[in-house]
Image (cartoon, rainbow, N blue to C red; front, side, top):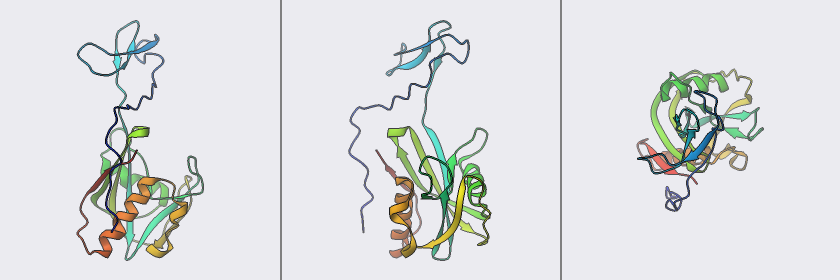
Length: 195
């Protein structure tokens, strides 16, 4: 069994997206500086003084299962056009992580699912993202992929296109799932840092 490894410990390197050039409140230029009572640089308006925080983006999706197969989607968009992924995407404002995961599965695969427990929580600190995958039971093998997907289909473990997976978080989730199945372990939450 391959151990579930985190990457080397945090080295002090911070993700610095620097998204704010202008203040969304008043339109004046922003500067990055450490505000009083803080410990890192923040986008600070040079006119009104408003501080703008940049936080990680949540990516939510599912690991849809039908008997001994999993559903993968072939990407019709960049990044990673033409590679395989689990149905997932950015969490929208006003929805829970579970609601977002179910929505993304419907949008990308046109799959009908019964959402189950949160399965993997993966911190991708180098790009400022947290990926959350829920296990999901497929209710049907009929799929109607949306415009972001070239093809949606089921794969057994032996058929998984491991060298054509779009993202490391997808590989980690699939690897953990098949290891859990082989060892007949309960499907508990797994987490890791990917740098």
